[in-house]
Image (cartoon, rainbow, N blue to C red):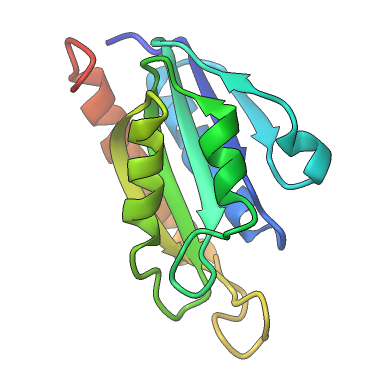
Length: 166
């Protein structure tokens, strides 16, 4: 399957989710040989626009985890404003060294319900948003190494696809 463009879109109050999603997307773009474009969903004005993707797109969608779930202030905007139209997706959540509970499954289901085909999903540890005591300095070098390995495996999976998965 030929992907023509890698997109990123995420909500990232502290910057950790944005860095994670960018690392994943850069590796995917390098492995798949296509351009990458970043979109932000962090500022309120960025969440007023509708985003439409197409079958030749691969979209890395990211969100932090708050109390084991996607942020309840952002979830409705993701549901209303992201339109997959058959695009492939990689779901990514960041969590502050506690637990991501059901957030990754929640994001994957949201993407599927919005017309995406989720081909990979990963949860990545980051510094906790409320304290420096948990996950200080994360994501660090070893985390980025793992992110790149994950993205490489996702790229290989996408390259092996002959048709859009159900």
